[in-house]
Image (cartoon, one colour):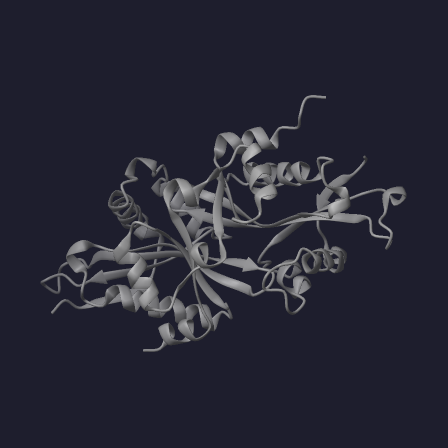
Length: 163
Length: 172
């Protein structure tokens, strides 16, 4: 199956938002403001899109069938790093190398920017994803080094901010 | 009573930042994994598009003519979750052993939380090693949730070698 991988632009936000909503994110509530957050002067993330030619479009007429969102981060051990926030391919287009191609593009961008590692999180119940990633050569930092992801938000954050 | 102050890191601080990064890594028994250099810290933190930001805690010397000493730091940057928006990510946070118990750590965290709110971040995120009991308790006491435990988040990583392999297109 023919497909292409390219950098996301402002016009892709509708499709990215559509795919975010269907990917069944646990915290799904309001549509994110991708236009403002990703395509203004100081973007908080970057995107790449996987697109198929018209003849392979979905029943609803979509040709944008996968995406990845990433941003630059930093490791106090090795320096420049990249963090892949989202990676998604519509179910009917899986098993055709689209996910691998999206990740390959993220890896190329990471190396071009002088990054030493690519980090991302997977949910422990998502076995197909974990298997896919492990087959691509990564390792599970949480199980090998015992690193737990923590977050302070809402009232706890407000409380911490008080004198 | 030791007086201390917090301030934004400056280019001249890179050697102290690296010293403290290594001290923290040593505490985590991972000091040989630090390959970062002062040059990289300088380019990456103080160029046109910084990859990270740093705040420094320093204490005044015994005499007013003494140079202040850098005794703590926090390294952070901004991340993005499409569902909840901007986050402040705390990469490293450390106070030298001999300066603990003075409230420096709490003050650094208060400063960062305040900064997170001012910059409209909805959360502050970080990783902790599960066997680092004092740190885990320090954060839980302050209301941090363990997303790995509660929601099953697993941090995965591709190191440099596997990144190169992934970036290379397959043979036709």
